[in-house]
Image (cartoon, rainbow, N blue to C red; front, side):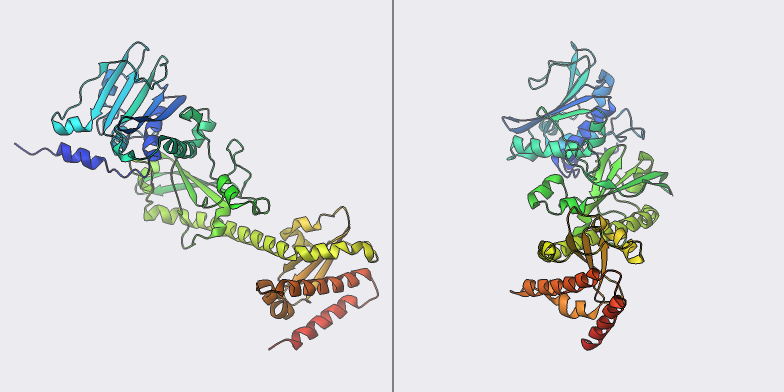
Length: 497
């Protein structure tokens, strides 16, 4: 007589360590089942029992007949095994996730309110003797369950030894946020998903959707749709990118940035069959992750036909893409990532410059009323004006009253500064390529020594004074601009090494 292919006691105890990263990942398996059973309402309850936390997940799905219910707690017992049309296809989710958290699992299901049926899995009883599950039997619903509708299911976990010492309130808060993010698309589609009676917030890591608790980002470019064909499957991968509003949000406090989801919120959200299965730094090639990358987002969606190419396991909580898939997607994803990183970096650098120049701008603007008015500006259709409009469009918007604005840019072999005028505004552009900027000004801008900020401001106001006097002369006398070029060249020669 041959040996059994599975030694049940050891198998069951090993199955408890299937590798669910958190309680939320385990509960997500039950939510998957409920969604696939056409549930419109799913209620998760986290309470405290005699042996620690206890958890119930109740749904109003189609319920199970006795044949389906009898297999519900069997490993691989799904009636949808191998079906790629929905959330699960292995028949491992319910028993595996349940055992990962609890020693006792009960599944109540009904297709008529007066006929509730139960199957039960008690690990300690199975280890002590019986190695078979009892068939479904008629029972009342557990006390924690709400009044049943015409059909539905309740999964109840007790003796949750893996959650020993944890407070139900804290577990519920963490569950609500995690489930709200994982199943955000279903919630937007009408699914009522609650934890202890409170709706799970549909958190959008892209910060695009106004139905989420926090939004305000803008989509970057069009959705990428990439047909993928590998040895392990084929399908279309969709990628969406968003860019956070640096100018609006950079001044938020650290607490507000955490609340909104900016801090440590970057990376790629990976979606399969409308639910999130992983978050990470995927398909970026050699690009290293930086703090700037918190300010843009990516969401990649793939169909179940590409499960093997994405390396998705039955726990649906992590991907391990094949090298073939990485080679197919990385050129597209990493190219957009580099572009967004550059945009965010420039936006932050611009803001840093704006903050640095703000005191001098305020000082220069405050004395405008005591100086002779500047003549009306000439046309701002020059190449310099076009460059400024492309990089700092806000500075060319005419203010209500006269002011001075300072920006900086690499203007190459140009004078120490250039100037533009729009109605009521004098715009001074420091040339970062000029030796005077690099030798005299830049060290002061980078210094934190006492007095350096004041000396830096004095240089800024010196340049503003020169620019203003040049602007005051209007279109004449001739040679003023040539004179600025000449003395800038002389200054460059004087301070060269």
